[in-house]
Length: 302
Image 1 (tube, rainbow, N blue to C red):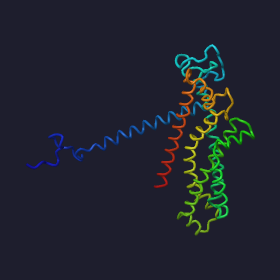
Image 2: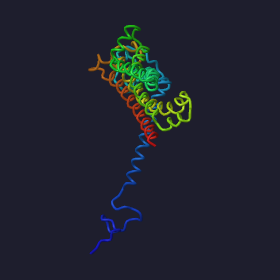
Image 3: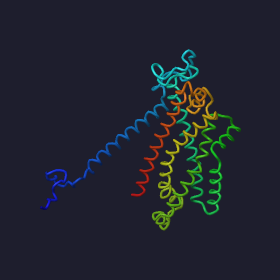
Image 4: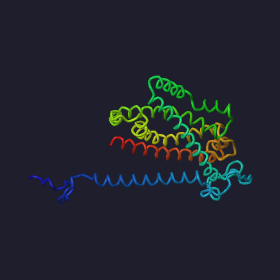
């Protein structure tokens, strides 16, 4: 007996019109789309909370992050103190929330310095002749060979420890990567067809750079710079942990890690919660940067 091809193998009834036997791609696609929307909403909520903590920490933690209460020292998390207290009785939740301001400030400010310096070097090497390209490329290579911590130590020896020194050190260390990216984007845009057409039409070099080269080259740089903010926050926290950042008792996450390492056995919360804040902010900012980079790459491919 021959089987009717319009019947589902799992049952005797005929398949609905237009449905492929055994296929559930439509349902799977719908579920994945719902999950993507949930992930996007969660990412936006986390980013909004980070921004709120950085700009208006009093809305989330109205207490004073520097207020000490020796009688409440080493309180475990829970109850009145959500994250517990440190060795001086300071509320750890309040300090973690207020620490977002300095960490985000360091991340954004150092990234702006790195992008600004990298843009100058990238444009010089990308638009200049062979001599400028060779000189700029050697300078970028020399900067890449300089470790971030060593540069921070040199700056601290000259200027002393502090947030401003960390911002400058992290910004200078990230500049070579941005310079290389912008150089390659400028070189690619300069060889494109619409730039060649603009040259044939007799447009000035300044107009060609401003209208046809920079808009396409700067976009990927800004998308990658968002990734750099998360990396800069991690670097700044590492410098703070080494005692090279904000001096105590400032509510800075790296400095809080440094203060809590002495009590890691008896007061684990003094290290865990600042560390989780660093990891959470780094993940959120990195995911945002990846989405921007992917969106820009898709726009360029289109």
